[in-house]
Amino acid sequence: MIIVPMDRPGITVQPLWTWSGIRTNAVFFEDVRVPRDHLVGERGMGFYYAMMALDFERIMIGSVGMIRRMLDELIAFVRRTRRDGKPLGSVAWVRRALADLEMRVEVGRQIGLLNAWLIDQGEVPTKEGSIAKVYVSELNAHLASVGMEVLGLAGQLAPDDPAAPLAGRLQWLYTTAPMQRFGGGTNEIQRAIIAQRGLGLPRK
Image 1 (cartoon, rainbow, N blue to C red):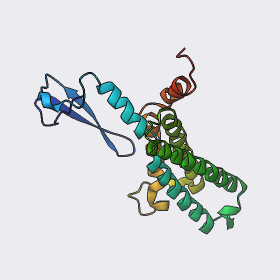
Image 2 (image 1 turned 90 degrees about the vertical axis):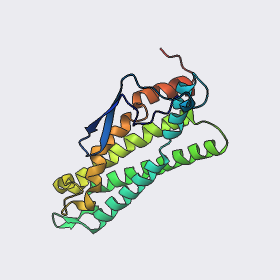
Image 3 (image 1 turned 90 degrees about the horizontal axis):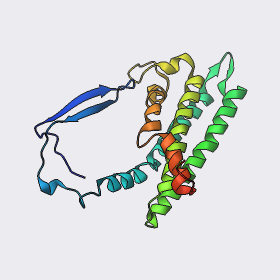
Image 4 (image 1 turned 120 degrees about the horizontal axis):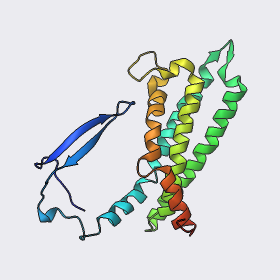
C-alpha cells in the first residue's frame, strides 16, 4: 500500500456527480512515481490492510444513529399531520410501517453495540461487520422508501426547496441510499463473506 499525493504528475481526477448531488471521482494514474518512504506498512501487505480497514468501515455505527434521528423526525411529522380530515397516525398502514421500522432500528442498534464490543475486545469484526453493513444499508433504503410514501408527493422536494417536508432530509436519504448497498463492498459480496468466513461454507 502506497500513499500517493494527489498533486503528483500523471494523476487525473474526473468528477462524477451522483443523482443526490454527491461528488465522487474517477482517478487515473499514468506513469506516476512516488518516493519509497510513502510505503505504508510492509511491502505486499496492502490488500490485507485494505480488507481489514473495510471490516471496520462496514460496522456503520454512525449510520444507525442517522437512521434513528430520521425515524424520530418522521414519527413527529406523522403525529402533527392530518390528511383527509383525520390524523395521519390513525392510518393503519402508517402505524404498522412505523412500528416495523422501530423494531428494525433497534435491531440495527444492537448489531452496532455487538461490533463495538468486539472491537473493544481487540477483535476484527469480519462476519459481524458484514452483517451490519447488509442490515443497516438495507434498513436505510427501507426507511427512505417508507418515508417517501408517508410524506406523499411533497417528499420528492429537495433540501434546497423551502417547501420540502423535514427540510428535504428524507429526499436526500432516498437518493443516497443506493450507494450504501455497494459502498465498502456490495451486499452480495457481504453475504458471501458471511457464508464463507462466518459460517465456514465452501466458496462454491
